[in-house]
Image (cartoon, rainbow, N blue to C red):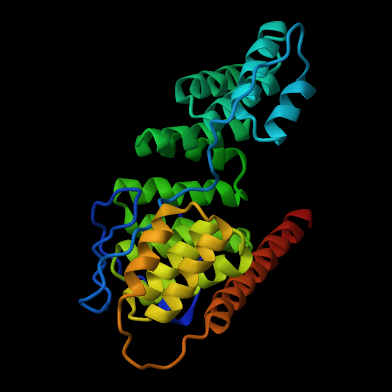
Length: 319
């Protein structure tokens, strides 16, 4: 894979001596990181970007408009939005945007077959529709078809080389293929492009956990929580990293934070119940803010360096 920049995310993770072993798109519960024998493995969150809802209400009778579908989508009535856009595309079969929104709504509602058909139709009408390629790759990742996802993302990257989302999804796909070095590089490139990409940080942190590198995961997951305090899975994943490094009190606080964000979050409930029973060895308090800061500064510097190179190149071409 072509690597655009060398990204140094935190002092603890400068070296990239990662063994390329096969892994799934779920983080392993058998971390090799230090943890007390009394504590069972924490329950991780899968590598995702957005939630999928199956909420649906009947579509309105009669002709529909694009705005009708958008309204349903914005209120997360994805099943209704899919039905509206299905009817809209019958009325306007030549509208690529309608097919794209049909695909997106169908994916969000869990109808993967219809989602693929929607994105396929959009791309037949507009072969350069990057969003269709990106979201089709998400469907393929949900189907556990990372090879096909990489094909779509490669095309999307050729059309939009500065898309951090493409790099992030490539990270997921490469990880699912077992290409760990490529996955790490892709996630790091995503963070350089967008230093606020909390999902890329979350997913890279989970990859490190999967590789038994919980200490390396901590700064990334701490920063993800800092950026997304209301995302329950971020708190759960940070709690898992803290637990795997023997910081059980701090882990309990993060699992509690996950339940504050989502009281029905079963994984966090199981994890919290377990760590509350573990007696923690005394150790230095863990400074989450400092850990998060160790991600921010190197990523921002790498982004500045990349911009400077692009500006110099543009000036040379202009002359």
